[in-house]
Image 1 (cartoon, rainbow over the protein chains, first blue to last red):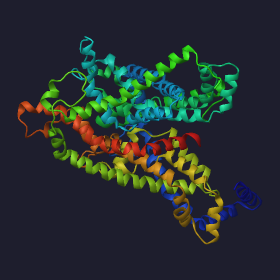
Image 2: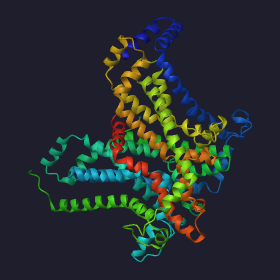
Image 3: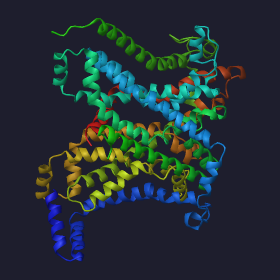
Image 4: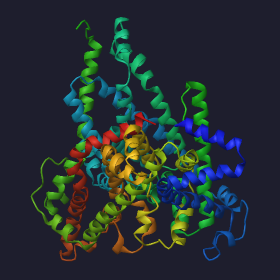
Length: 320
Length: 293
């Protein structure tokens, strides 16, 4: 009820400032249950979301557990400098960008293509069966999915057995740096394609059917209808999801990569977030790895803002 | 129908059908393979090469070994606890926030929403979160898995949107009858929001069931490990040794293979069994989140 708020504001502006607080106080007593409900929620966000943001200060400090955040001495940008001069720096940047590029070029469009193809199926029953089956892998835990990859991609595993039937030499997929990215991306597609298509199918169902009729009268076949009606219809959805994807580019994947990689494949598999995990959690080098993590978040945020700005200019779709 | 199908469209239709069948096969076959392999005789499956269309021999030894493994049993019990307690905490916290923020005239409401939305883009990251949990003394306790994720901002927004869709007149008439916000939430808003609550329960519960990363970071004590962390050891770090103490040395390697498959089945079975019944709710949730915001 905006009128009420306006009235309150009007009342507040005509009387001295301290009585505005009186009105708020009165409201807090009258609606005390609402404010009591908000209390744990605000405490939660303060403690588990904003306290870690404050904790990022240690990226600029020589953090010692005993000294705490305030007691540790400042070191300025020394941790960042160390990271930039680290000889793994470019490898981490390259791997992070490469995995994300594959993700954007292959794993992102896959659900869109599936949704377009599902949309062409005439039989409702068949469509529903395909959808049900394709969602399933989304509910399997990462640990099990990686366990399956490890087993199927082993030297004597299922994939090599199938390849062997065509006379191919067995490949140790998980030990070869060259195979890490294809394996990672194809498993991402396997797990996400069905689930990802739901949102596009939902967007398609909101397209006005008369547009299809009009296109048909103009002589458009199914292909033309798809290109000129369906795809423009789901474009806003595609753009919003693309921006979100770009924004989370640098942070996604570490949970899965940590399970999937091994020292033999670090060459292509080690990304910034897995490096933070190894250095910080396993190596207890807190200040340094917090700095690397902060670097990662800053780049993500710049990418998100850039993607949003470009999309606003080009297509008038944006997150904000 | 006036519409005539061209040759190109017929070819496309055939291609599309083949593609869909291939997709179903690629999605289902790994599961089918695992089921057959887990039921196979360990010695025979170790020698077997190629696609599996039925179990090689038959043996339930792997399942026996898995169900007798103390780590799997404690892992299962711990996971059940984390799923139940975690989901209850999630629901209480998310409902409180969603209800309070769905009311129309709350002071600072927009500021609080801003505070919440900001956390969806910015976060402190792995290391500061780890140090916080350490400083709070929650390291190596179940709290580290239950509290840090108590609210998913995305779910809070979905739930708030659902609450806002409930007609105001219902609430007003209750207020005239003397109901306070607590009563309105419990007796009017929640009973009318069962679909969205069902979606929340499912999403949060599956999330807890499948999560491994916070346990990997925060837990040291093996007695507290959830199932996923036990699975990681068995499936990925290849340590099936402690399960085969009874078996003769030669058989150990063989049975290790079937144990992996049986472990996957045992740990995934609850979701696989419930999945067909829950599917529509899962999808429903995505649609609520996608279409309204």
